[in-house]
Amino acid sequence: MPKICFKAFSFLQSKLSSRGVQTFNDCMEVDEGETVRGLMKKIGLAEDDVEAVFINGRVSSLTAEFKNGDRVALVPPGTPGPYRVLLGIRDGKKD
Image (cartoon, rainbow, N blue to C red; front, side, top):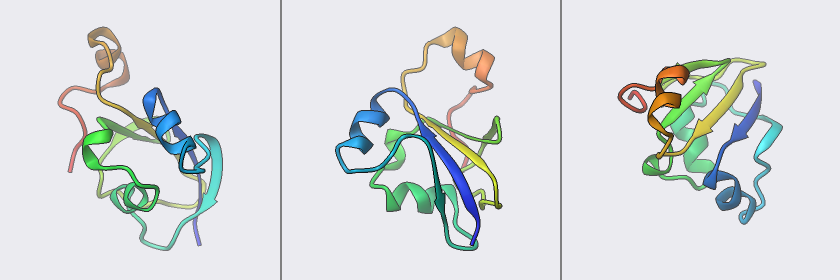
C-alpha cells in the first residue's frame, strides 16, 4: 500500500479536525490506485471544498493516483489573486 503525507490549508483544517482527521503532515496508507478524489471522499470533503490539489509541490488533478511517498496538499477556494499566480492555480482544480 502506498503511504502519503497529507496537508490541508485554511478552513479545511478546522473542518477536518472536527472529524478527527489530522491536517498537517499526517502520513497515512492509501489503497493501490487511490485518487485524490477518492481520498477527499474518504475524509469527507466535497469537490467544492477544494480549489487546488498539489502533489509533490505541483498542481495536480482530482484523478491523479497516489504513489508511495507522495506529499499531498489541499487548498480551499478563496486564495487571493497574487498567490494564485505564484502557486500556479489558474483555473482551479483539474479533473
